[in-house]
Image (cartoon, rainbow, N blue to C red; front, side, top):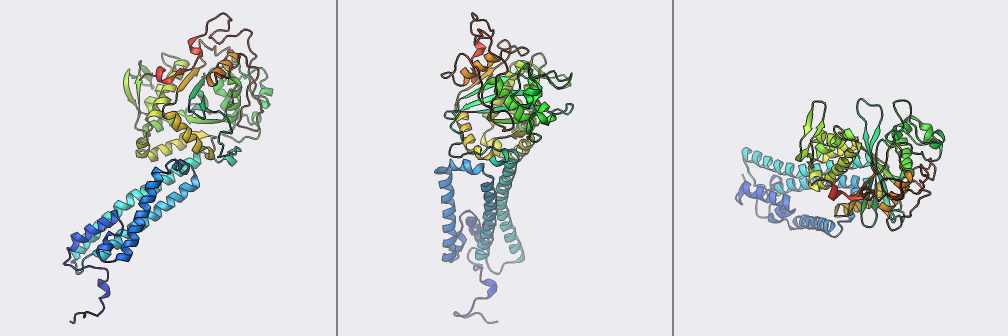
Length: 505
């Protein structure tokens, strides 16, 4: 056999291989691993300066771009996170990055692998490279999959403004309003119940500059309220009276009534009639705009809590739950989904109004404990639960501004709660003028007037009347306290109280 001369060609089989005496397989695998971490190391070690320099430069540019993005342009990531088109591009980019990265690992090994290896050495080398490729592919695949799942959940829950009929000016997302009012609904759609009853109804009025929030809660059994002008009021000119003997005309029946009677909300499709009529009805009761709503199915809510790994809360008294005589004992507890659901729903040995207070504390605890680590470790479960559980008319285009605003709320903004429950309000014979007056003082004390003759327009549906009027005329001499007597002192419950002070901690 003749050996190649100094000026002869290197056999094609050995083009990508280093000599067996230059450290052998361990060195090749070490260089390959280094190239998996910093592209181009193996090529530079093999003397391929052009290719190595290009790979190293590409790696430096990518790392620098990532560092600048998460530091200088961190706030812009919020806009990316809530734009489905950008998320789709991001998922595709992650896949491309993964393919290129795996190719770099494989090529790096081909460049530095020793020549003349035995079959066992080749097998060992190929296996080690496969493990490296797998280590690269798994996080990349997880990132692409999570981005896709997140995008799917985002588009399933939030429609675009054109789909909702609510065009958003991103330069002025709040349309010049000092507050945004979002109706938070808890729907009780049990297996043994037809339709949805909104047993939890709270208007969250948020200051768009500071994040200061007032939670205005109405009881499920509120009666004698007027419907908004239009077909609904034409049918119930003297106040809502329900639909049959099993539906006496409570506030929590409005949602399902609208879904079952399309003619009271003409032109609005199914699954949106209920929210639209309820928004307009509550706007009239409180004398405030209702900009958007979020409905949480209470039974799906348990899935969200389980996906979070439970919620920590202090139970102050025994709470019976379930059908088997189980009890949530007092103390600091980490409640599972079913337990959290009963904590917020149980009325045994209590009433609707005590339950409303527990619900607010539960909402506060979940908001505080839903940290990024919890979200990331349970991402798929949370996304799936959210798709089953949440519905809203908040447009996608509003999400960047809403996330920025929620950051202010989470970062220490005051959250106060005002519940229109006895003894402040008689749910069977409410003083609606008092409700509107206290609401006005709670959301804008410096602008509140002693009387309220009309209520602002409840936005949300062009098919409903443009003016949500009060559901009762003001009582003569009604005070701001728990009773309408002119000489009665104001009740302490007539002012919003801080959740931090009222919720057990």
